[in-house]
Amino acid sequence: AAGVIQSPRHLIKEKRETATLKCYPIPRHDTVYWYQQGPGQDPQFLISFYEKMQSDKGSIPDRFSAQQFSDYHSELNMSSLELGDSALYFCASSLGTSGTGRYNEQFFGPGTRLTVL
Amino acid sequence: LAKTTQPISMDSYEGQEVNITCSHNNIATNDYITWYQQFPSQGPRFIIQGYKTKVTNEVASLFIPADRKSSTLSLPRVSLSDTAVYYCLVGDRGSTLGRLYFGRGTQLTVWP
Image (cartoon, rainbow over all chains, first blue to last red; front, side):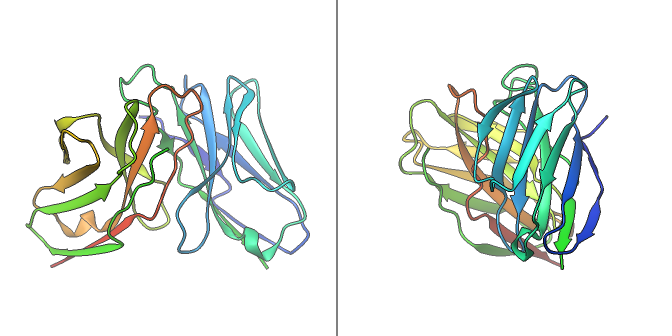
């Protein structure tokens, strides 16, 4: 079965540089979520999109922005990178509360490991 | 949303049954309980979900007492590959937002 695709899988950047992470949700999924997981930490919600509109916003720094495109893929743009941005960034997609009968079951991608030097 | 509390870590041996209990004292009437599993450097994966009583699927069982202030994830006959972090999450069935709140999960280590 098709899964969530994230690219790149690994990314190394210098401080103050920019980075763009991409996410391709499972076909027909209408909601995309972004999570950040720092070393030894638990995943933290950043932002989500439903039908190409921002639906919720969590602890996302102002230096970060995201959008969902007409083909439902999403991009997380990160500027003025800091050492503390080094983390695993996960994208997840869902059908909301429809389809599977499970409330808000989210399917996570393999993640992008961002290292800021 | 109700805050969840789980043990930080648990150890088991292959073939044993493992029970991980999660406390959610302030769970609301509309809240459901979901467990996710996460292997190192991988995204979390849905395991099981329930609202009350007992739910069983091909990989685990979820026991929820009548007061719903706790829940127990039961993994039968664990193997080395069950070594992972397990997260207990509480969500609002009436919410359309959908963000998942990951608290401190339980690191389960299975030994040979």
